[in-house]
Amino acid sequence: MTAFRPVTLAHRFAAKLIDPGDCCVDATVGNGNDTVFLARRVGKAGRVLGFDVQKRAIASTQRKLRERGLDERVLLQLEGHENVGRRLKALGWSGIRIAMFNLGYLPGSDKRVVTRGDTTLSALGSCSEALLPRGAISIVGYRGHRGGGEEYDAVWHWASQLDSSRYMVMRYERGSATAPVFIWIEKKAQRHKGTKAQRHKANGVKEYRKLIDWKKRIYLVGKY
Ligand SMILES: C[S@@+](CC[C@H](N)C(=O)[O-])C[C@H]1O[C@@H](n2cnc3c(N)ncnc32)[C@H](O)[C@@H]1O
Image (cartoon, rainbow, N blue to C red; front, top):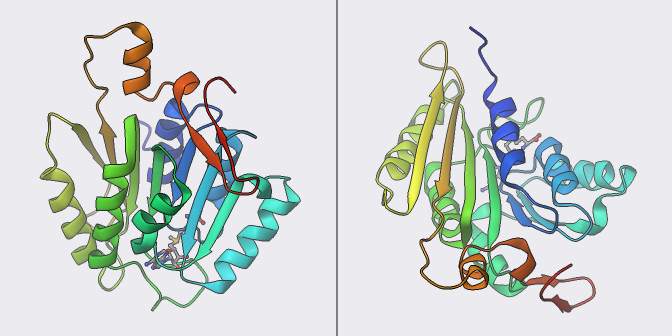
C-alpha cells in the first residue's frame, strides 16, 4: 500500500477544489512551498494571503514568488495568523476557498519559533467562518517536537467538535504515534431551493463571486 506524505495529500485535496480566481490563505508561509502552490492554482485573477512570524520566511518567500512571476497575486504578512480574521475583513473578500496550515517549526531554523495551540485555534476559528461552501481547511500537524503533541490534541479536539451538518472532517495518520497527521475540514455546500443562479451564488460558484483587488482597489463582480 502506498503511504502518502501528509503534505502531498494536502496539495492533492486542495487542487481539486481551487478554481482560478479563488482567494486562499497560507497560514504558515515558512519556505513558501505552499504559498507557491496556492498562487499557481488561483491564477492571475486569484489572491493568496500569507502569514508568518519570521522575517526570514517572508523575505525568502517573497523572493521565490518574484522569481516565478507570482508576487502580484500574493499578499504576505509578517505577523501571526491569529490576525487572519481582521485582515480578511479589511480586504473585503467574500470568502476563502482554502486555508492551509502546515504547523510546527521552519526546517533548518530556530526550533523555538513554533506554532502554538491557542493562536492556531484562533486562526482556525476565523478561517472556518470565512470558508466558502465547498471550501476547506487543510492542516498538517506534527507531534514529534516539544509542544507539538499538545497542539495537535487541541486542534483535533476542535476539529472533531465542529457541527457535522456544516463541515466534513477527515484525518489521515500513518506510522508511529509521532508521525505527521493530515486533517481536512471541508465546508459542505448549502442546499438551496432557488434558481440555478441563486444556488450558485449561495455556494460561491466562480461567476458570481466577488473579490477585491487590493493593489488596484477594484471590485470585480460577475464573470472574470
Ligand atoms: C512547518 S513551517 C511551514 C512550512 C511552509 N508552509 C512551507 O511550505 O515551507 C511552520 C511555519 O509557521 C511559522 N509560524 C509559527 N507561529 C506562527 C504564527 N502564529 N502565525 C504564522 N506563522 C507562524 C513558523 O515561523 C514556520 O515558518
